[in-house]
Image 1: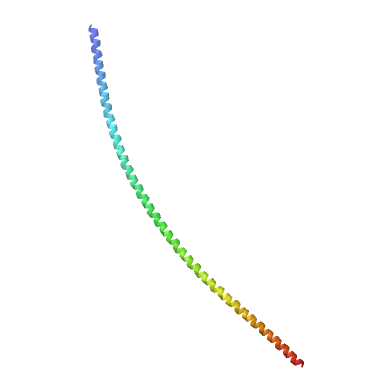
Image 2: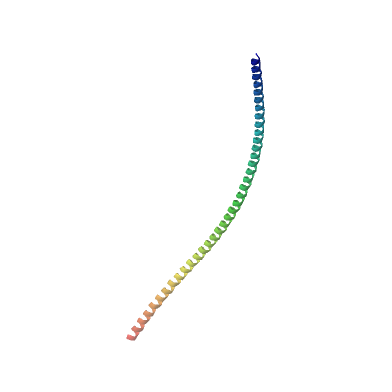
Length: 139
């Protein structure tokens, strides 16, 4: 009986120790889980802050790039419009000069034709006079 009582006592002690170990284990596991959840939450909060900060920096950079390139495009458009106006003015000037030269050529051409006609008439008159002189010499 003593042996059975000792075994019973030993079994109860063992069960109590195992129960205490299970309670300690559950308590430690809960503490570790709470600590890990706290660290996880802190890291998630820090990640959210960094994400917001990065998004703000990216938005600022995008705005800066937009302003920079809008300025470049504006100045390029202005330069192209100025160049286009200069080319149009130069083309207009060249067209006017071309028209004036065409008129001058036409004037010179008609003057040349007038002079050629006058020369032909004079040559014809000189021949006629030469023939009249020859005719008078023969008489």
